[in-house]
Length: 217
Image (tube, rainbow, N blue to C red; front, side, top):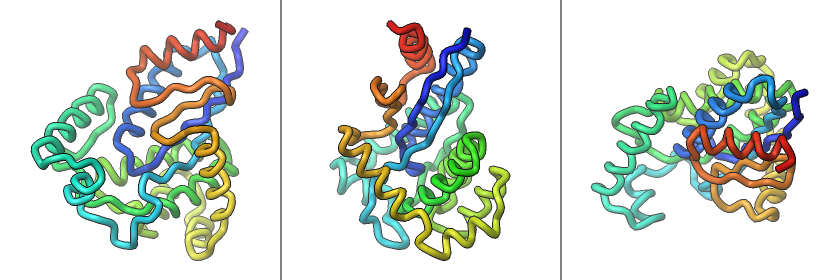
């Protein structure tokens, strides 16, 4: 008998550890195929909600936010790239050029969730690839519409959403809900609304936790 598990993956498309966490979770779910029946939902979290149009140069941003040096940033970037490679996710060797506002990406993800979980999952992966692998801006409407197409979604509908404020209230409400639940760092994986797994954990950690939760342990 398979156990249904609701999995809320709270993350931002500009978060490298979210790409690692998702790749790890996907591997864990493959290993648990037949044991659990996951219902995967991608929930919004903005690392930089006040980021202005055009974004900010990555080095300047990381220094200002975390006080890190260029050398520390380079070492972190390489460590992230290697973690991604081990999981099958490609980070550009040169890293990100800029950090951008991601609110519109979250509006499209909300719409994709209404279209079906597989569509939302595909869009999430397309957005992460566009930013981290291809070096594109998740702020640009053309990039967002192309990601929607890659996910099998209607480009005209995606453009219509981007041209309006559609789903803005819903995304903000979801962001507030998870902040009120105590989620202040991502990725955060919430299982059945009660169990929390945080960070870009290895697949083994997700696998063990999901199996234990499914068994009622």
